[in-house]
Image 1 (cartoon, helix red, strand yellow):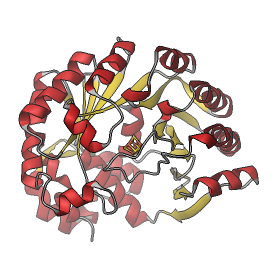
Image 2 (tube, rainbow, N blue to C red):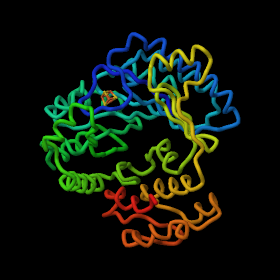
Image 3 (cartoon, rainbow, N blue to C red):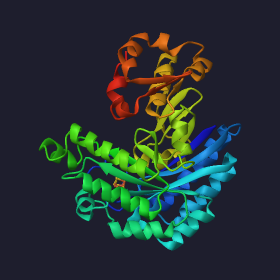
Image 4 (spheres, rainbow, N blue to C red):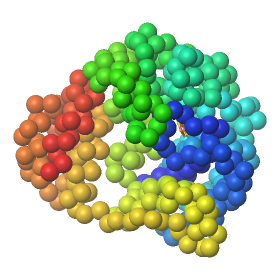
Length: 369
Ligand code: SF4
């Protein structure tokens, strides 16, 4: 089954590490943009009327910065235009600095049943350094509004001066707040962002230090009942993100909104990154796609291997054979021979051993050729 992604590209201000497509000074066009999103949903829905979708994800940007009635309206269109399963997972990303009781109540009425909250760190000075608009108190307020809900918290590693104690505090705050799922991922300093200068100046922890923080966090999460199911994702039993699992299983998804990417009918395609161009295209009745390519069989095989090995579930030889009518170890015999020492194998499944999962990128590089 497939997923739907909606990109809401507005933010209050730009975080120092952010290179996502987000516009801090364009909230004035939010209403027009959301109307375009509704039109795009209507048109894509017609094209995909024979497909069933099991997840919807509203990401950004900061979806919670716009008027919640816009979110309600867009979700109404999604349920009208697309065939969803009986119990779809519908997630919205929240910035703790932008939530209110009324917003959460409107999201619930819109059918949203999962919340992804950007905590990032439970150290206020680090949040300020990252340019985040919220503090730890805001997160706790947000968590209190989400009491009993299915919600996830994001935690970042590799921040300036970050210690294991800081990671412990972040995990404890997320867990005490009631998060059922925690994403713990390493900061990637991207060229062109303010934090890149800190990276060039050697002010950020190096790869080994981040790996140590990760290992510390992984063990603590395990003790607290969060099971790793993908390199950066940990969940209490039954709370794995269905939307993300679909990506890692190479499932189809349609992306709506500026810069959104899609994978459908064996093609990967991406919408324009230009907000005004996006709206112009939609208003003129054309899809705002700027890039589209058919995935070759070789690339499809590589994607299958790469995505499956990111997960704790690992790669199923049977599923690979069903998809490609060949044996993955034969197709990737060189890569497999070089990397098999990192694997645990049982039955038809191959997994990267727990202690190596964090360095899976280096392992999977052997499969690039
Ligand atoms: S809130 Fe998210 S999308 Fe917006 S600037 Fe910060 S990191 Fe980027």
